[in-house]
Image (cartoon, rainbow over all chains, first blue to last red):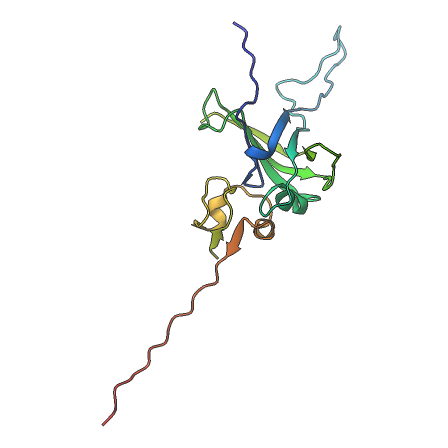
Length: 140
Length: 58
């Protein structure tokens, strides 16, 4: 039976800081770069092989509500621009398990941040993209 | 050095907890970022109190 999973109670931890109650969207992109291994004698193009290890090219995108209060979004994010950090995303805040895996992107880089992104009558939000780093999936 | 948790957002810790750098796991940034963001406060080591001999010598 098909099931659809939506992040109703996700855990979003950036640099060890839990920003779950400010987070409205999270996308984890797990990418292993495609390397061509086609050779003479092949009738079709091939990519990868058991002996070929390509580079990861991962990213995590999150959308957060902006808050300038103490220890909230702005205070936590502003200092992370231009350095490496760790982001952890889980489907729910429950303990890590096979049905609630955690995805940890270690050594990812935050290139940019929009401290002010405000419109009249709307809650201020910011979208962050953490690029690079090594992604590990844990189920226990 | 020990640090006191000063916010309720630090993963796995409560406000008032006393933790060390290692307690935060694979943190890839300097702890200063968490101090500046208001999540941690460094605890200064207390100096030992010197005792004063108050007994009068004969």
